[in-house]
Length: 277
Image 1 (cartoon, rainbow, N blue to C red):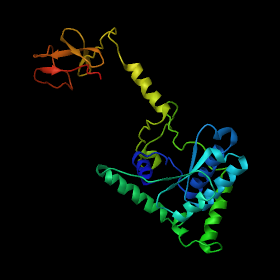
Image 2 (cartoon, helix red, strand yellow):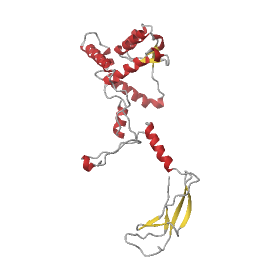
Image 3 (tube, rainbow, N blue to C red):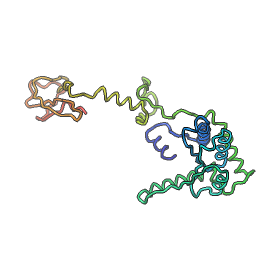
C-alpha cells in the first residue's frame, strides 16, 4: 500500500507487507488454509473476505473437505460484485455484507479509502477489474485462473517471517563504514520502535543512566584550556525532573591565574556544568 511504501522510503526500513500480488495472494490462501483446519477453527469465528471468485471457491471447498462450514462466514462489501454475492449466498453459507461509513468530519479519510479501493480494483491483475464481462475460456479468465494456480503453488514457499528485523541489541557494523570506503553516503535507518528488541535496547540505556534520589550528585567540572576545576567555585543546587541532584558551578571574574594558550576570556556569567535529562 502507498502508506507502507512511503514509510519504508522515509525511515529507510524494509517494506513491511509483500511487494507483489503473487505473494499476497499466496499468503492469504495460506492463512485461510491454516484457520480452516479443524483443530484451529474452533478458536475463532472466521470471516473470509474476498470478491475473487477463485478465492471464494477455494475457501468454500476447503471448509467442506475439513467439515468446518459451521465455523466461518463469507464477507463482502455492500454494492461491490452484487451478482457474485448472490451466488455465494445461494450456497447456504453464512454471509455478511458490510458498508464502511464515516462522519462528515472524517470525510477526507473516506476519500482516501475510496481512492485506495479504486486503485486496487483497476489494477491489471485484480479480479474485480474483469468481473463484469468475465466469461470462461476468455483471455481474462485464463489469466486469472493461471494467477490463482500460481498462488496456490507459491503457498509452501512464500515468506513467513517479518520483513523488519532491526535489532539494536545485536547489530554490528563493519570497521570501515563511511562514504570514503563505500563510495556513497547513506543515512543510518531510524530506529523501529514497533520492534520489542529495540524498545528493550532503549530501556536498557535509560536504566543505566537514570539516577535516583539516593545517588550522589554528578559533578561536571569547568574545563578551561584542558584544565578541570572542581574546587574553589561557588556551587548552586538544581532540580532535575528525574529527581537527579546536580550542581552548577559559578564562573566569576577575575580568572585566578594566568591565561594559558587556547583559553578564551568570557565575561562573568552562570555556566551550567551538569544538565542531565
